[in-house]
Length: 81
Image (cartoon, rainbow, N blue to C red; front, side, top):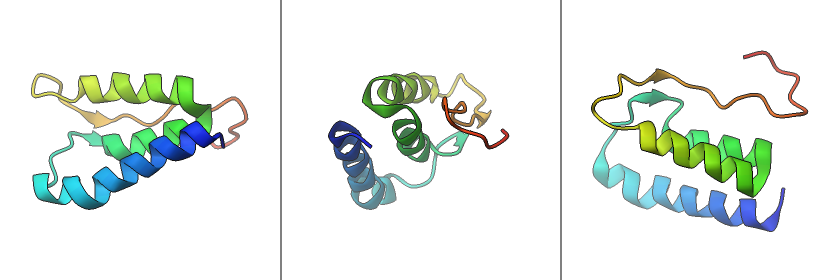
C-alpha cells in the first residue's frame, strides 16, 4: 500500500474514532462510507480509491435511498461480490 493510501486511511480512522461517534449512526449505505473509503483505498490506491470514495460520499444524501453498495472488485481481487 502506498504512503498516500496509508495517510488517507489514517485520516478516515481518526474520523471514525473522534467525529463519527459525535454524529451518531446515520449512513444510509452498507458498508458505511468510511469503511467503503478504507476498502477502496486498499484495493485501488490513492487515485482511484479517492475517486470512488468521493463519488460514494456525494451519493450519501436524503434523496438517495442508500442500501448495499460494496466497493467494486479490484484488479487482483478473486473474491465474489
